[in-house]
Image 1 (cartoon, rainbow, N blue to C red):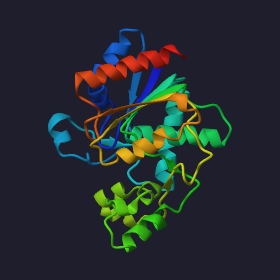
Image 2: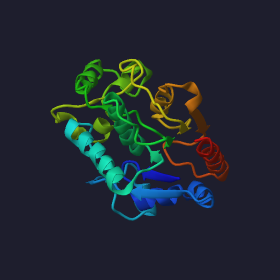
Image 3: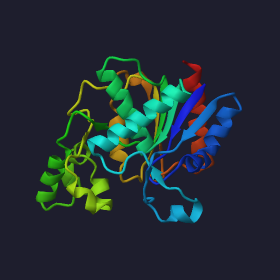
Length: 256
């Protein structure tokens, strides 16, 4: 089978290929193919340690969750699928999962065929909803409260608003005209994941609630498989977790 592979913010195709080598090397021995692609926008990596390990470029599929940038990111993936596909599956990390899911949900709303038959999401972020432009207002409500948006006070609002992590890390972008809001089971209950997905998440990931919420959004519960490891917002590095991921991928792919 052929998988489309999408990196996270501050990564690139070569970096993601290296990070997932423990997983993909097992699957390649069974004849499966992994195609890695770059995001189109330059950005700073979220962790300076990345620069000490991996050379540039440092890329993203979008820098801010504004309609134009998210639409361009989804269009990029559509173009890759049209030119290089079809792809049986999607392997994504963080923003890569987000863009792929945005595409899946847009196709679902248009009553068109899903772009993939299955997925593997590592440290997934909730996707942005191009039809809901109220994200900035939700963020402003939280900010006006005087409470720390990282705290439990934000509750589900933390997941509903457009992406405070972008604002916290890039305060100059707060003046963007429109921020999108994320899909969420509370606000878009009719939108569901319709393909089998293996969700991999770290219990120490500050954004793990987004990954857990996305995993809860399956149309059929039996299409959902979750692996939770002890790490943070990262592609797992330990052999035991990677072997487990590869094993479950083989089982999932064998059932299609």
